[in-house]
Length: 281
Image (cartoon, rainbow, N blue to C red; front, side):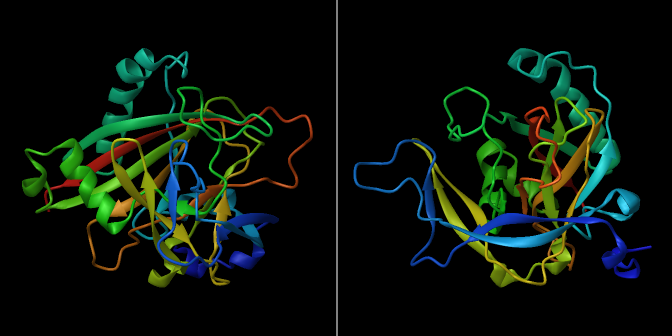
C-alpha cells in the first residue's frame, strides 16, 4: 500500500519551523570557509515556515527510495567509537557498502565521505575538523549537475562507463546515541516536490566548487520524521538519481527543532555516510 492510499491526515504530527530559501537575486552561494573580505558567508537566506511534520512510524514500511526518496531501515553496527576516523573507515565503511549493495540490489557501492555531527547550543557550523552542527535549512546535498560530477570526481577512469547505467547518491544517516529526541531529521516526500522548488546553489570550498539544491517553500510539500530513532536504525536519503523515468530523483531534508523535545534531552549526535550506488541496467 502506497502513501497515496494512506490518510496522511490521520497520522500524529508536530508543527515545527523549517528554513526554506528566501527569494534571492542571482544564484545563491555559500562559502564553506571564511569568505573574502566584504563578502557575506552566504547569500542563501532563510525563510522560516511552520509546517506539519508527520510521524512516519506507523507507516514506516511504506516508504521507498524510488517513490518518496527516503526509507527507514534496521542496520545494527559493531562500531564502538564513531569519533575514531580509522574505525569508521575500517569497520563502518565495509558494513555500509555491503548493506546498501544487498538492500538496493546494486552492482556496486562506493563511499566517498562521511560527516559526524554533535549539536552544541549556539555554535556555528564550521568545517574545522571538529564535529559539524546539524544542517537546519531545507536542502538536497547534490544537484542534477553535481550528482553526475561526483562520479567523475571519485571514479574518473570509469565514470563514462558507469554512467551508461544508473547512478545514485544515497546517504545513510543514523544517530550515534538514542533514542534521538533532539534536532531530528525531517524528510520531504519527493512526490510532493515540483522541479521549480529546487534552486541550484553554489557551495564554494577553498579548492573546488560544489552545487546543492536550496528549496523554495511550497504549501504542497509533505514532511515526515521518525521520532526517537535508535542507533540500530538508519535513514536512507536519496540525493541524486540519474534515472529520469518518473522515480523521485531528489529528496529534500533538514534538521528541525521538535517543539515536543524534553528540555533535558541529550544533544543530537549523528553520522552520515555518502555513497555512490551503481546499477548496470
